[in-house]
Figure 1 (cartoon, rainbow, N blue to C red):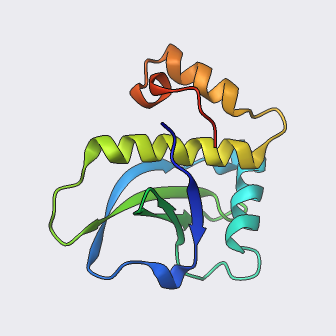
Figure 2: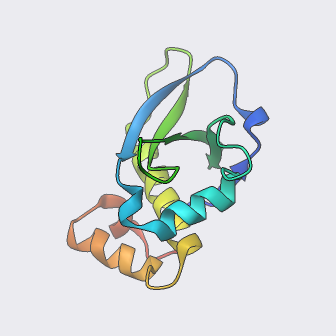
Length: 138
């Protein structure tokens, strides 16, 4: 089942956690709607030098690190990292399902031609376990 994704204040980043990369998108310029949504959601126009974006999903935290490239509008890319306590192993299955929830949140926020139903259909075609687990949307 998809978890609710909550945008958190950067000050809520848990102490004693390390960042484990989950997903990188280097070409946000290919989809300016996604760049615009992330910029608005995390206030990147007002403070591009601020801390990473922070999301919570089911009590777990994820940071979005925004990347700039010379000659490209900011953010040109984004990396999604799981924040894992200390040296504990990452719960890979929970992270996969949370990442699916984050993707649904992102697509729902962008809207327009981008739909969660389309994402879920694509996920089922590619047999992504989180997509097959339910038809819920955020």
